[in-house]
Length: 212
Image (tube, rainbow, N blue to C red; front, side, top):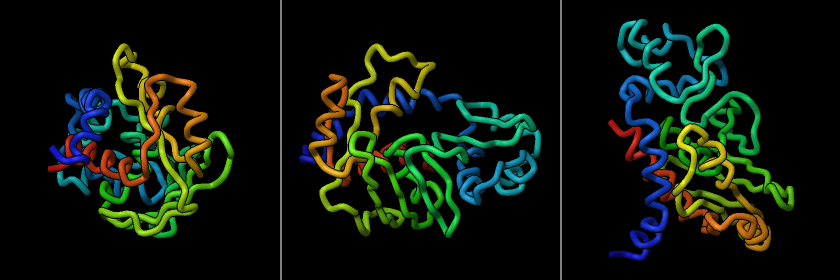
């Protein structure tokens, strides 16, 4: 087993927790919605149907088949933690800003939409800005170079209906290891990891849940 495999094994419980939440969703249809959300506007069933080459009814059902977010008009505004409402994680793709619920989803976005992206995250401890420039499969630039991340090592005893508390609130970017350690010390499930390790986790989630 490689060092990377060993590191990833520590987060297997967390990966399985997220994967289970999407087991019954129409992922084959929904995966087409990420590129549409990246335009920064709600996605209608008609637009998703055209993109996914399915009927409008199938698209509408898919938008309700998983833990998604819909607006009052039944249009998609959140999918897999990719959302239109501002968060600590701003992601710019082709000049358009969208947002992510957590650090791992932010780093997953280039793979989800097959386009480069710039991520700007606010360190929740120091309030400093962490900036990542990402291609589809790699980290092109990182500011500051001392930046790290935090991830929960397990989802044991977590409420499966409350993904924000069980998962999202623990996944953050930090300007330096001191801030990350201060954050991690508040919860025994949190572990400080490198940005590269977070990127590997992001790609593993995409592979398990959204690959064709």
